[in-house]
Length: 193
Image 1 (cartoon, helix red, strand yellow):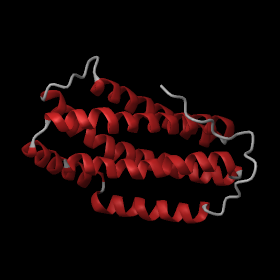
Image 2 (cartoon, rainbow, N blue to C red):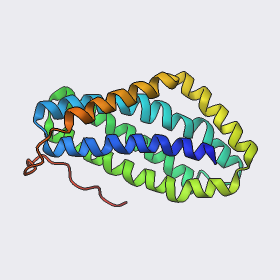
Image 3 (cartoon, helix red, strand yellow):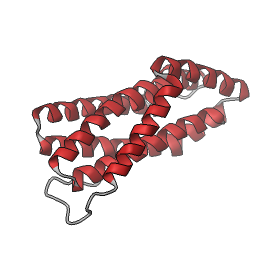
C-alpha cells in the first residue's frame, strides 16, 4: 500500500539522521557534535515528530484502531508510548546542548537513536504488515490524502526538500570524520527492548 511506502520513505530519512548522530557522537570533536546535535534536535521536531509522527498519530493510528487494531494493550498504544519517549529524549538532548554537557547529550542521543531503531523495526515488521491486512484501497487513498494535508501543515514539499538539502550538507561535512579510536563519550550501541 502506498501509504506505508510513504511512511517508509520517512523512516529511511530518519534512519540516516540516527546513523549520523551515532557517528558524530562517537567520533567528532565536541563542537561538531554540538553543532550536529542542534540540527538533529531541530530535525526531530520538524520532521520526525512534526511530520512523520503527526501522519501516524492523526491519520494512520486512528484508522487502524477503527479497523480493529487495539490501542490499549496493543501495538498502537506501544507506538504512541514510544513517540512520547522519543519526545522526552529530544528534550533531554536539547537541555544537554544548552548546558554544553557533552556526556549528557551523548547519553540522550544514544538512547534516542536506539529507541528509533527499535521503534521503526516494530512499525516495519509488525504494525505496517498488520495494517496492510486490515486496510483496503479506499483506506489507502484516504490516508494518502490526509497525509498530504498534514504534510502541508508541516511545511509540505518544501520541508522534505529542505531536510534533504540539510541532510546532504551534513553528510558531506561529516564525511571527513576521522574514524580513529572513539573517544570516551561515544554513543553506546542500542539496547534491545
